[in-house]
Image (cartoon, rainbow, N blue to C red; front, side, top):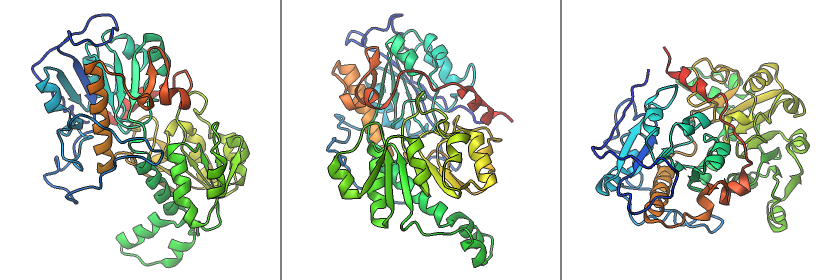
Amino acid sequence: MLRSALQRTAHAARGSASRLPYTQAQRQAKVVVALYPDPETGYPPKYARSDIPKVESYPDGQLAPTPKGIDFQPGELLGSVSGALGLRKWLESNGHELVVSTDKDGPGCEVERELESAEIVISQPFYPFYLTRERMASAPNLRMAVTAGIGSDHVDLQAAIENKVNVTEVTFCNSISVAEHVVMQILALVRNYIPSYKQVVNGGWNIADCVSRAYDVEKMNVGTIAAGRIGLAVLRRLHPFDCKLHYTDRHRLPESVEKELNLTWHESAQDMVPHCDVVTINCPLHPETEHMFNDALIATMKPGAYIVNTARGKICDRDAIARALESGQLAGYAGDVWFPQPPPKDHPWRSMPHHAMTPHTSGTTLSAQTRYAAGVREILECYFEGRDVRDEYKIVWNGELAGTGKHSYSEGNATGGSDEAAKFHSK
């Protein structure tokens, strides 16, 4: 069972009972952060690389995070408890209380208890603290939930709207990171990479076993569910492979982009998937997309098709995916997103055939951590200084969907069933 890595400062703070905006008169704030545990071998004393490339802007022209300062070296491990998103020195020096813990699941967990007196809660999609309506109701001082990354479905957005709890995320910070992971996993499935790798590790050399499920992606029909920041980046990276590219999105791409990449647009997922050899899922999770890939939709796909899902696990019906792999309707399934997270040890995706699943790692490379930690710092600087947060960082703002939230999400709640995450820690 994971032990909590709770860390705190001596500065205690309690906000007012109403959800009023932060003012300079409130000199102290309590910030609660849920982060994944440090490596089992301990926090890294050194890294494989001494530096990382600097990203100053994204493909759509949006600037990378621009905080006034950072207290970490780019490329450090920031997403685990010891890294603390690089926030500890800055928050403590300004008189705020910082609580960082891995104990985020189940009734009475450390993060839940600390939330009751917190103004701000921060969580990563990779190791999410599920901010349910009940937890929100227990935290009268809570003013903002920050996602260190992208994708805020671990927050009950409907409850946040009703309770006027602002929800923000660091939009685009790791979109390219995820797109790279998608391409990697498409190739891993289609080329049958993992069984071939295991041949070497296990001392074997049976080439027939390796290639009996291996194909080329060239000329395959590959489609993406959603063509936003991640989906479009996937399409751009697959174009040189000479695939036939498809997409569906409620916001159609410009005609110039469709011509540049030779894209075929479909009005819905139902229209697109029968044409595809590979489907990659890149849409947000909200009530309209929850369990989109169920038995009925999968039955309309080509026999032997592949699915790569790096969006959210709950977009797929867990048991329907396992059944399709066992029957051969799907030739493979890959991704890094599960529901809940961490998944119970008996989750069927751990043992189903022909999968290439990883833990939720696509968007938390050391490169991505540098950007989303800087973005969290920027959001907090705006909050404490009374400045507006970038519109693209807003998901819920002043009681309504706003910014990226208005473009990408729908009202409602997708956290149901998240209590199962506590099963991972049970003996």
